[in-house]
Length: 544
Image (cartoon, rainbow, N blue to C red):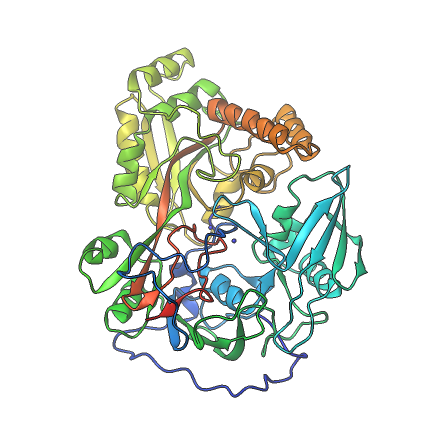
C-alpha cells in the first residue's frame, strides 16, 4: 500500500569540512515545504531498485549521453515532509527521505530494474543447504570519517531497525532474521541465522530503509554514512547540502555538490525548473509533462511501472466472498479507459497481478479485456443480478477518485450499482485494511515475493483483500525452502495463476512516475522504477 527501494561522524561531532550555506531559491518561484506538506508528497511504496548501466541517459534531455563532466552543484526538488524531517535513514518514508538517505548512506543490497536484489555494501552472499543460514561478505568500503564498514556496523544497524520499541519501517522486512543468533565471523563477514528457510533472503538486504550506519550511531545531526556524498548542512523542511565523497566505494560522483530542496506544490517544482533555479524536479503531473515534453525548455523522464494502481475486494465478505463476483469485476473493468482517464495516459494497463516487469511476474498469462456479457453471466450464476456495492476511495493518492468514478460508469453497463464513498486522506489506509468490502489501492515497486509475503498470506499484516488460504501459504513456504531457482519460479507462477483466477486484487494499471530535468543535466536513468537503485542516482549524473 502507498504509505509506495546518511551518515555520521562520532555522535555529535561536527563534520571537519566547512559547510557553505545553501544557495536560496527565490520565494516568488519556489514555495518550500512547510510542516504540513507531507500530504503533498505522497507516501512511498515499499521499495527496491534497478542497476542499469551507470549514467544511462534519460530519454528526455537532448544529448543526455556523452562524456561525464566533473564539477558543479545540482539542485534537486522533491515534495518535502516539513519541519519534522530527519536524517535518520531508518525513518525514511517519503521520496525526499529516500533521496537524502541514498545520497548519504548505503544498504547491503538494492533492487535491480526487475526488483531482484543486487549487491551494494555486500560483495556476495551464500546460503547453507537448508536456506536458514546466510553468509554475507562485505566489500571494502569506508564511512565518510575514514572508518571501514564492518560486520559490527551491519549487526548494530539491523538490531537498531528491529528494535520492537521503535517504529522503523524496515523492521517488518527483518522479521525472518534471528538477530540474537546472528554473528560477525570476522570484520567483513556476517552470518545471519534465520527463523525458517528463506530462499529470498537477499530481499531483506535490499529492504526499503535498511541502511547501514556506524556502530553506536543515535545522533544524526551531523550524519556520517558510506554513501556517495558527505554531509555539509541540513535545514529540515527546506534543504540538505552534501558534497562529493572521493572515497566512495563505487566511484566518486561527478558533481561537486548536491542540494536536495523541498517544494510542497508541484507547480512550484515545475516553475523553479523552468526558471533555471533547479536542475531536477521529482513527481511532476502528466499535464505538466504533456505541456513541456516537446517544448525543448526542460526534459521529461518517465519512470515506467513505478506504481501499481487498482482496487481491492475483500474475499471473505459478501458479495466478494463468491469468486464469480470477483471474476465478474475483473471483466467489468476497461483498463485502457482507466489508464487514460485516471492517469491521463501516463502508464500502461495491468492484468490483475502485481509486479509487471519484475522477477517472477508471469508475463505469459492472457491479457484481460472488458467482457460485459460474460460479467453479467457470472453475476447471474452467483445470484447477484442488480448488485449494489460501496467503493471506498480518497484523494490520498493521485487518480483514486477519478478511477472510482470511471469504474462506477463501467459497472453500470453490467447492471451493477457502485456507490463511491470518499474518505479521509489521514486515515484512509487504516480504514480500508479491515473495513469495507471494496476500495481503491496502489503500491510502489517491490519484489513479487515481498508483495505475497506482506499482503497475501494468512498472517500478513497488510492483507487488504483478506485472502487467507492455507494451501496458498503452503506453496509460499515450499517456495522459500526451494533452492533451485527454476523450481522456485514455477511455484511462484502457480501462486500467481491462482490469484489471477480467484484473487481479490483488480489491478488495472501501472503508473509512470514523472521527473523533469534541465537541458544541461545528463545521466538520468529512464530505466528505473521509483525507489529502485538507479532512481535518484545523483552520484551518476553530471552537468554539461
